Image (cartoon, rainbow, N blue to C red):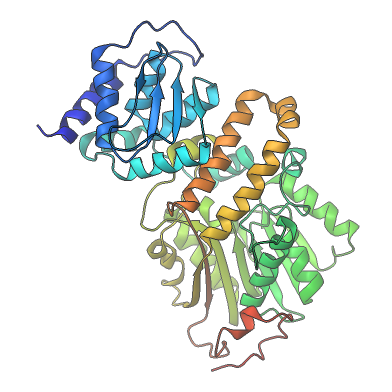
Length: 436
């Protein structure tokens, strides 16, 4: 039996011994058992490039032999250690949120190290078992509203504490390094409008509109009419109120409805930050919706977190932050376009822009920790700190991507000759930038 097989066997044995007890910090655990130390040392040897020192409840330290540690993980009790060894993808977040493990050092760097370790983890029967244990929730019509409610309807006051002024909760676009978050979110909305080549009078369908900022931006600055769909009720209430206050409710209609319920015809279809919640198994339905709604010379843009290859979202993120979420790989995204023979005109990866966006969000969140603690308690603060720091680590490490795909009907030749229009300082005027 090689080292990988031996460690997998030991870890599976440990997993079967983990008691199902409520999470609590600082339980009396006694000294570390030799088998447990062997398990932990085996994990570090197997993932030798993971430069983290584990400090156990009895004061023992277990560190990698191949690299100096960048941080220390304090493990509060024996049960926490066994859970961490048995199912690290899920249990690191569970235990950190409950305060049963602590991180001394950069949380972002630790999560980056864990992502690298995950990519080298053993496969086989143990991984198949973990995939079943960590299976995501479904995202059909029955579950979609509950999944969205779990994340987006926890209170607008909470999101106001750390998002930009317009509550744009998707990747920003930084035209330069000194741009503020507010400036970068406006730049992102303009960038999307340029990619869509919006012109006055266009009918736009937006699938998943958040708090409504993009729809209002398109209507105000590009003279279009927007039908924006969402199933998060607090977001919809905010968006409708803002449209009324700004006198744009005659140009923007916010509709409570799932993407599968979209009926409006459009010249442009746009979805920013919704595809992650659709589920690959439902891409055929999204394709049918776009094909039914999009005009003959229509164009579309889908903006989504993605993966380099087909894979599940981190199970802790899926369970506690985004239930039912599944970012697609590029090949999986093509399932939206190929059945209707849409032509993909442009695909851009903005993952470093998302890392920069998360730097801003995390800093603002940390500044608002006292208010968040008063709202939801310490465990919530720890959970969301890890979510933001972990997401920053994932984009910086290339574990997650941010794709923008632009598409049109296959026979539509009124498409740009070059990409010059994307970087013009002035707003585009229709589609007069040069066509084939």
